[in-house]
Image 1 (cartoon, rainbow, N blue to C red):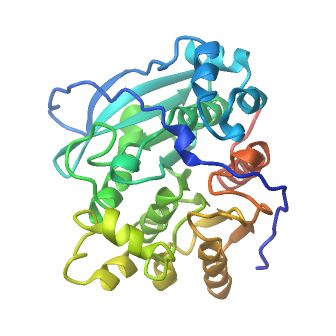
Image 2: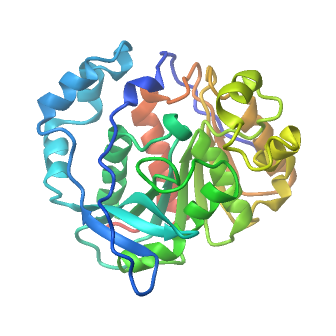
Amino acid sequence: MNPSKILLNRRHVLQAALAASLVPAPAYAEPLSGRLLSRTAYKFPFATYAEWLAFMDKSPNPDWQASQMRTLISEATFTRYARQETVRADSISYRSDGLAINGFALFPRETSAPPPVILYAHGGVAKWGRITFFDMLELFRLAERGYAVIASALRGEGGSEGKPNLGIGDREDMLNLIPLASELGEVDSQRIGLWGFSRGGGLGYRVLAATDKIRSAVLVGASADLVTNPRRAEFDEHVYRGIVDNYLNDPDGALRSLSAAYWPEKIAPEAEILLIHGAADDRVQVTNSLTMAGHLSRLNRRYELLIPERGSHTLIEHQNRVRSAIDRWFDRSLGLTRP
């Protein structure tokens, strides 16, 4: 299959502007059965739209300042989400490998049938790993469209128990969201999608290699080759030690196990995958997704490749176009029908 490309315009962006930490789920009581440990109503960390915009104006990058945010999220939309008029949003804690892992669950208020599920895997790792408030606004948007959206903060991050882990740990935290979805509400467990960004995109590949229950995935700025990453020395020094399984014994082997470019055949063959990557991404090179597109084409897998021209890592400058691509992909592949 030949990849299709979306060519857009260039503007640079810093992901650091997303540094709005969310309140972790509260203390839990161990249940008699099941994975869900606690569930409480999610509350916006900003009391008003104006307060949020004032916070965003502190960003040094114009693409994340109030003038841009107003074009993406209106005051009416912000207020509707904050009041949870169309979406029920909860902070949750769930069991994964004996640890209490925090996350979020969002369900549409009104559906004519059990909704499809989208699992969200966030970017960053360890002290840089978090589900940002802007992420939450996008999760609200998807839930309002008719999806049940479940997100994990992952172990050692976002107030979750345990130590941050790139390996079996974070993969298990994501896999445990699959049965958890049915504990949280009535869902269509035959229609499950996954949306991963950056580190979450690389994690998405590993989830797709571990289960055939994911029908569709959107991987944005996803890492696929940590071994030859131009920033390898930086990550060797500041990130990988103590976080990547078996890293001290076999650094290259440990990173290959996290890098889908070395084992594309393991990815569930029925999964449909949309790859989105900024052509000017200075954090995860676009070659990661180009390489994976080549592998998926060779294996005759169902995929598309969208490369916004001069696009940054977060693609915030192309947010509306990226939203449209994600909506189209999930609506078609997960069979979401609208009145």
